[in-house]
Image 1 (tube, rainbow, N blue to C red):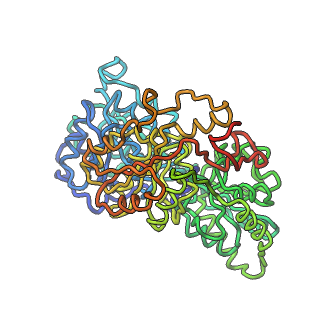
Image 2: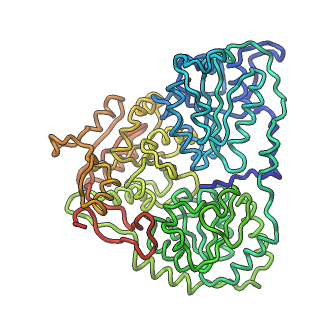
Image 3: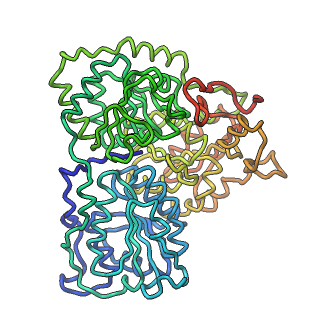
Length: 605
């Protein structure tokens, strides 16, 4: 999602003073290694936690980290676990996440996380060790040209060729990652530069004239007045809000109070407007609610705030909101008109735009006479006619029910991370998110294995919070090694594993579009299909994490309560039927009229 942050060009001051906590171990004019300068630069940016896995080319950085009194390293068990944890940290706190890896395979293991942060607009700073400068380009041991590899999946990246540049580069990296549309920045540091002794020059100005000049300005009042006029003229307006509103939840709620316009959220926007509010239409798109998609289809005004008209939202572009005037507010000019041409567009921080529109609405007050009661009534009828629902078969546990019970027992307050697939969609539909940064999921990239490490990052950033990884058996096993990190760091992460022994979402597509022909989507042991395989409880046991399995619906509530009541980490293996389908579903490239609301893998298509 094009994520608007609270940083606007007007308020930006990249020359931040050193963080209050950072006290140098060195006298100001004392030479020190480049690696020590790098770590002190991180401290000056306010970094408290990093996710770093050492290797030959990054050893010096790790040696320097052991001397820091401020920065804690949470040691992942795979570099992909480290970068996903840094993302979970960033997504749940709004602060930039930091991960560190060695050169070669360590650096390439960060690629999926960088791509994920790029497409979901997550502020991330990744630091990699590199072979010494003189060996670059010689195919040295553990050498990959990581700057070239990551060029198209980072917002910007650096190869440090002069030790004196480290303070400026680190400052620029954090500024780039967090300003405008956030994203990942990579810094590649050759080993000889990490070892070079030098006196640091801390107060170098950052050199980003082009970037600074392109940062969005405060929104123009005339445009916002025009939007308010469109609102007052419309009969059937809908808000379509995404990840770009994660820093403007309060302003969004005020806007909805003033106008009474119903709100549909994207996968990335869940929690920016409370799901349980009577004006919430919940999620729209491929697996969105009938009423959210109905509202967009019938609307005469679509207010698209902090969104990017992704194919999983729009389906067939020509048919999406075809009766509506479209207003698009986004911080990234490249998103405006990329997929769908708006009638009015504002390239700005959505927080500033909402604040200003709220001021205009407040000043106009009762004069506007906004009344959408007939429209809301029409949508409420849709809500009653087509609620999110599911069926129960005998004693089997419906996966949707497991998430509903979790929602009840945590009062909708847990931080939820997920893998990717059916369980992810059910977690989006059946957990009622109340606030932003509560829902951590790999949206645009759809990276399986995201849930467990993202939960680690969230638990580190939010000590004392209830953090639950709702995962599928396929996704969970992709980063199962991070159970070791959870145990060693004693993070109180609960894992609700919806285990159907299959790659569920692909199975659903096989059922619907491939006559249920199974093409390598069974994840159990084909020679013994009656047994659950692998035995996930043994993974937990290997890492000293308490675990239990539940197979019957009547035992589920007590099992989830026990998981939540047990101090520290816990794995609950919930066995669910693989025939379930995520519904509603608009097939890829389809339109509202093509929506499927019935059936599952027990039916032939």
